[in-house]
Length: 151
Length: 75
Image 1 (cartoon, rainbow over the protein chains, first blue to last red):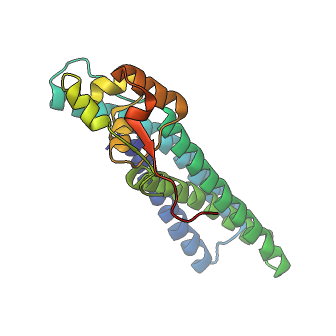
Image 2 (image 1 turned 60 degrees about the vertical axis):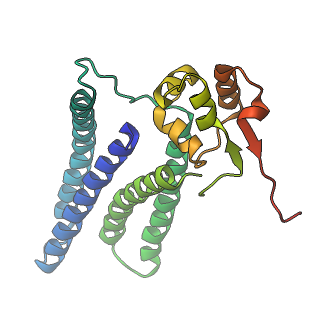
């Protein structure tokens, strides 16, 4: 597994955990009758905060883990990690971004559609957050598939 | 997705060039080892520039490294 693949796998795991936490908290809020703007905005803040911090920590952790793995494999005290993107990595990243933007756009459309069905803005807001994180997950999955199966 | 229609002899050429490793070829061509692996498995078709760089590493014409298999279905 290349460094980039490890990075995307770690990112996928992080965002899956974030999405799981978001959905569980959302259902708890709905069931507890606390589905109001204050609670949802606070939850949104947690999700965005975890996403940013999680992404940074995952990148650092992946670098450290790759360096340790490389030292163990080669015995070289100054390991060279291939963390630069070559043309194949760039193409896969661009295709992954395309998938992310497509899912995100569909998510925005579906979120706006809730207005047509008379739902309050909180529902739209909650769906927007869900599709934002879900789009990132789908994008990472598509990148991993492209790395494995080729194109 | 899947196998590309561009096939190559990179693995054989590496063998006949002092058993060059994938890592050595990757460094000379300016890409990662995973890209070389993907090309040898025909899971990735390189850009024109990369194809020329690889041919230059082996000191052979482009056609001796890469070949193209056209579709059977004519449009």
